[in-house]
Length: 267
Length: 333
Image 1 (cartoon, rainbow over the protein chains, first blue to last red):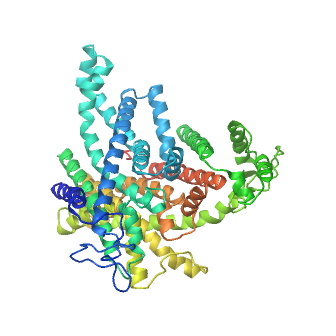
Image 2: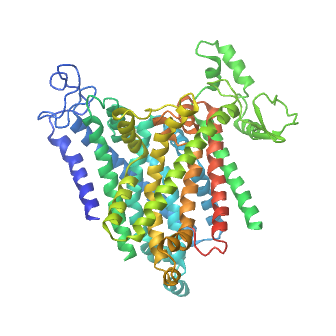
Image 3: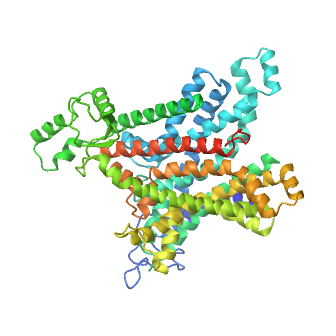
């Protein structure tokens, strides 16, 4: 868990601080210093620590901005997905077997069987733009299905515990039981779910960028930087390596944290 | 038996739900199919005529009813406006998904052409996932807490953190760009070229899936190996190999089959990113193309195929699990 925390913290710091102290703009080409004599992007140097990209923009600053955007989207989308998923999962689990549970779970079934890409494109088209907010909303509104399943199962477990029976017997209201007893007892699972969810959101966001339905250029994203870089592998391998390492660091970091939580939960 | 029938009925209901949802989402997408069919230089009158012909000027509910009526019908059906021109026979039934706006061919035929390629890729990937996952998972469990085990767990975490396109790009750089051993992408013309083109995308999906599978196999094998019956089997003189394969692995098969089966179901419906990255002409690449082109009928076709494959595989997984573990002793995940 420490490794994971360190990785995430390092990347977050890099993402926040670099644009503040950098002398280059992430969206502006530098045709004076950023271009080599043969007309190719320059490699890593004192001026450009990670070189320049295919249209001679500072790779380091772009990477930091991309990491910032990816992290922000992933965290916000996770917050949305977890709120919806937990609420629906807890309600369905608490009223398991009822009509409410059945309707909610059938909606989840259909949602899970539905091709993700088409849902994303539909929401994107309905909102008529593809900026960071749209992608965040899309990932958040589509990412809650798995969480709902998980939280329903967790609630089902907790529901039969004696203290719940006792609370019911002592005449507590349903909302009271849900708020005071169920939610605190399933919140551990929510936290574990959150770390893996952030990792998955970052993967999803970069996949969407690759397919051309993610955030529109020129805004840098980790996924798009990787694909732009691969074309120039022969002349500028750093353009591939840097975003690849960044993706592995951030997703791996969150996975390591989740792993740590799970190990703790198992005792 | 009754619960099986119920399961199939519930699955069909889910499939219907998915198709219905997809139909109305597709309907809500801003696009003008009539203009696409007519071409960019058509006169407004022609566009209007084509819109009428395609039934696009009717209310959405009526279009939906027509779509569902046509989707599966009897070969002998004499429905109004069904000329069987875009049908494909499945026994006495006809399946009809209409005609592509872009390719101007029956969607069923486009899908029939591409589905086997996605199936091939999916099976190859599932095979790699199953083999790598069970091998490394079992070995790591047997040497729990050793250097090998720690390294395996580390590798699986790394694998789970790498998106498929990252794995794919790394494989492309190593095997195609640097070593020049395998084609970068494409499908080829001859069977030999197909096989060579298959290796990298199959490895990409296989490695990605294997990371998670290895973890599941390792964790369940560790739990199983500490059971009394394993110790008894060993004490009775069973060789380690025999005990592991016959007694332990059989019980780890349930979660393994579940994961690989569900993944297979998703892959048959098209590995969208991997197929696009490697230009593998399957259902996944078709989905992206259709979505970007706003080719409604093709998009609906891919939805039917991918949701159908996923739902069918989950039934297959259930049947397999019941066969491996008839008493349902091991709770499936």
